[in-house]
Amino acid sequence: MTGRLTAVNIGVVTEAEWAGDASGRSGIDKRPVDRPVSIRFAGVTGDFIGERAHHGGPDQAVYAYAEEDAGWWAIELGRAIRPGAFGENLTTYAVDVTGAVVGERWAVGSALLEVTKPRTPCTTFAGFWGVPDLIRRFTVRAAPGAYLRVLREGEAGAGDPVEVVDRPAHGVTIGEVFRATTLEPELLPRLLDVPELPEPIRDKVRRRLGVARS
Image (cartoon, rainbow, N blue to C red; front, side, top):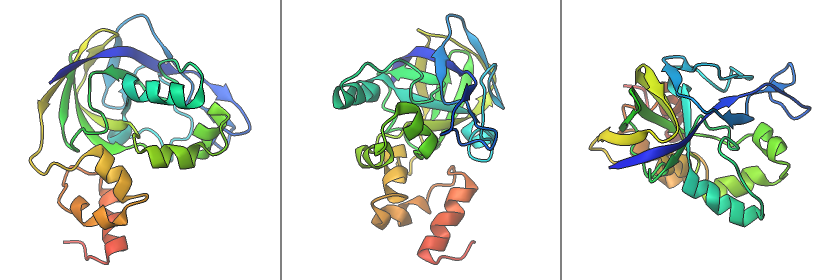
């Protein structure tokens, strides 16, 4: 399956009382750029990350959100939502981000990325949008976008194809992981069969299920 990039977005420094960083700075405000950008193992070149305790790192190097899901929110909130407004680096079109299988690999421009985990909404996100109950609404909607790790560095820009080149057989999707760890804990056992999930999530699942680490 092949989709495309609507935009590649880079975070600017935002200083606000709702920013999660102890310094009061956040990189959630990401803006489209009009040129190809480098995607490195550490993330998108030029992107600002404020609260590194919860953002960034190899398993969260790049964040993708679907244009179609953003369109749902535009109708829900009655306002325009530009690319980057979810704090995403990659705004995609015709890519099933919620239905992406954990461990699925995407060829994006000349980079190769691997789907790792869903995004968890936070107070910084709600503050940036000015919607006090956004965390609850985002959780119920369960279209969280996907974090990706970088397997091959490269460049990507708006209009580049996004091609799914490999998909693990276990079939556990970003949407299932999100629902399992939020409102549908009965799905948690499914996550034990997903070796591509970041280890902190797997450890959390084992603790909640009372399963010893093998």
